[in-house]
Figure (spheres, rainbow, N blue to C red):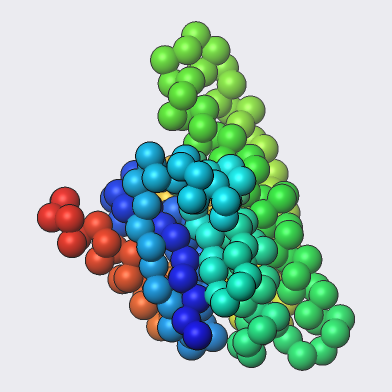
Length: 216
Ligand code: GTB
């Protein structure tokens, strides 16, 4: 039985693959599982039918048989645990790959999102110019540390894993800034992720939603 995920009917990122359904699509492509997509308007996301699936009225969700999940990290972990290809067999290596998923979501992503939110909502405030270096400094701290750990390796811990999948999608959120340019090994890491055939299939699928609307 195919899983059904939810995604934006009209993604504010205009098909750039930055919304969080992208990581779920990518995970499903990596493990070779077909999936259906239910597209939602912002209004539908806040209606009872969707709130029953997602308490915060967001995308993505994941439905498979009698299982309904929300939170992109939990969904990717579920996919990775039930299909081979995204987590190593060795128990310790598996635990470390899962730790990288959590690191991406709870240590690296928050300062990136905080800067993004400030850019969106505080740009005209008097304090914005003063606050921005601090927000960017917090991101640079994490990128310094992550870049040092990655070194010249291809992936964070051995072979490509769900930890890399989440980390690459998190780092992609810096696309509209120049911050990642300061870290050649991290930029190359993101490009390696984007070069994976499964990533490309997932990216094209979400882009097709945007182009089908005749938007440019
Ligand atoms: N922690 C949750 C998860 O990982 O699944 C967060 C889910 C989430 O933030 N979903 C967003 C959403 O549904 C879409 S991805 N927002 C609607 C709402 O809250 O009402 C976040 C996102 C949105 C837009 C861009 N963009 O335009 O570039 C990037 C990322």
